Length: 124
Length: 124
DNA sequence: TTTACATATGTTTAATTGTTCATATGTATA
DNA sequence: TATACATATGAACAATTAAACATATGTAAA
Image (cartoon, rainbow over all chains, first blue to last red; front, side, top):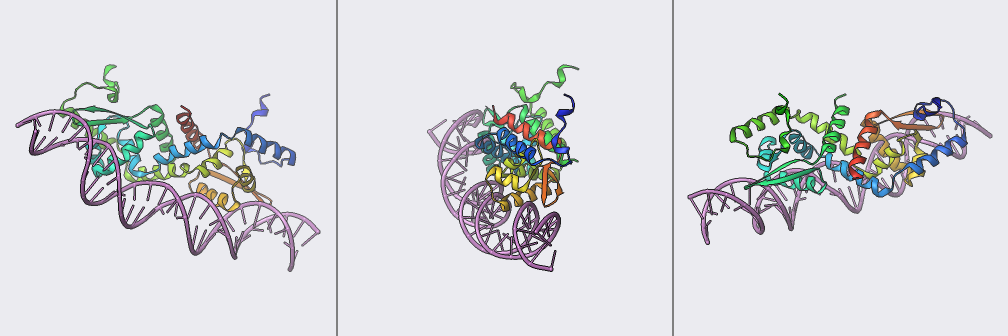
């Protein structure tokens, strides 16, 4: 029982044609629907821009308003606002109004987790 | 001691100008170097394409050769090869040769973690 | 209800990038 | 050492997209 779960990826020994086909079938079964993988790619695409990452990271601990972010990161108000719209649409940030200002913050812990995971990989 | 660590992001109460400035300074201090955030964005950019995500996911449990992937995902050999090069360059996959075939697999657990984190967010 | 401040949005442009097609490289076998 | 098979690579093209600029919307204070 214990030995059966060893990761196939690590096995460099020869494998039969039948076993290969079995693996192919397993992969096909386990593969999520294209639609889900498309959404997943779209999610990562949002993290995949240095301006947006800077904005997201600036909100890692505290909420910030648009002008704060623009000032902190030396970006135009327009650029920040455009990017925040994308982050809003992807549900990566939430916001609240306070007077004339609108304060943005990370939407949930998932966002923090994803960034942290990426950081770990980058910092190797 | 315990109360001081409460997450500022969740505080909707009014905050003084001085406190705001203190927060701005904190954010500036905590912000990683642009170079690091650039690399982080580059990493996510690699995950941010549906073809590459499909390829990565197909290798979630097992190593696969180029033709396997092309067949499984109904992609051209050229397209798969091009994308695998990008995945190789980003250290997201590793590979080994076995005769004429080259078997690719996810490089490490980080890759799996990042995909899983993204999946959790998408499946909400 | 003006005026100023804060943010959002529409449009254009330049740059990036995924795919395709053609071809090259590498490996095993007859 | 030809031939076939597996993978990689180069170049061209089409599509996507971030930034800049101008302008619109929303809010508060005079």
